[in-house]
Length: 496
Image (tube, rainbow, N blue to C red; front, side, top):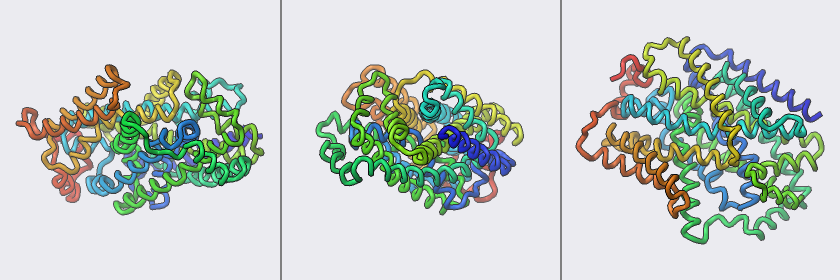
């Protein structure tokens, strides 16, 4: 019965995605939904950017094990990311009329910085996308009662997401996000009510969590503070230079909608992220034997707390609501997580070397790269035993060390130069990898070492004599050019 409902739900989702694909007539439609989404759709897509597998299964389980102190990155850092992105970059990106976030680096610093930052951002998506595919596989595996192996289930899940994303791009993502957000809000709220009731009511759950110290957020020593800062910064700053955040902001119909939609979506995410956290802890109160999952060799095992409880203790309609909400969360994030690196790689890594690509050829190339990236993410997912929360946090360390400082300095510091950006990227990534290899357990986390090095590189490179020629435009010049009929983000065939 449950399997039948889940299969029907997946077919409906694919159907919505394929119907939305009829709106795709150009690369702009495929990448940013023709920049035409109204506020309610923009809010839904922003909410769905973050509300994925790791929120429902991994962040909630991590809280159940370690309390609020174990989840500073998500939802706290993730929400700060969306609010900062809206306040600092939404209007700017909109006025520059960019197609991808890689176009910003090209506009500001030239082709070499564009390619380097885009490669870093694309690589960061391997962990992020793999987390979603792993979760989708886990759900299919659990629902089949183990009849479908985990690896086979991950392959099946990837195929489902690929089918509707490859045809409709951002239009499919937007329409399925809207549908899936509604299912998430209703489904998880009902499950929270039921599980809370099983545990003896919300007051009992909250009182027990408080008694066990689960609400202790601030660390008691310097080691804890540094670790918390590393996790928080990875999400709050490292996820700003990400194509999926950019894509959802700039799909809005105008800049005001982009700002409002991103802030509302971010705040809505923060509030609702606590629902699965409540459900996971209520599950432990209801069935303390689930704590045994914390002791397994495979870190992914703790992510089964909610699926196991729902299948074991809930009526069939609640199972349908929970797995519908869970699949919605995963599918809405996974589709964006596949589309974002695909668009960035095609536009900012491949296209500079094939400058005269027509729109139809560009669309075909996007779809080929989408399949290729899905295959790469699958290989990563099938060979990782990290939790989804860890996979996502590791993904953002790449962009924290290599892409955030050039983005912020390029937007708000007129003296930021091509030389500064290159030094920032090289030192940031270099020091992060070095610290990760040589001293991963040091007091200062490797990702913060990379961030500090990136800041030093930007300052040194921009203030020193310019050995490397300045490329790109100032922000004012770029906005002026686009306001007076310039092409989006300096087409590669006419690059300065």
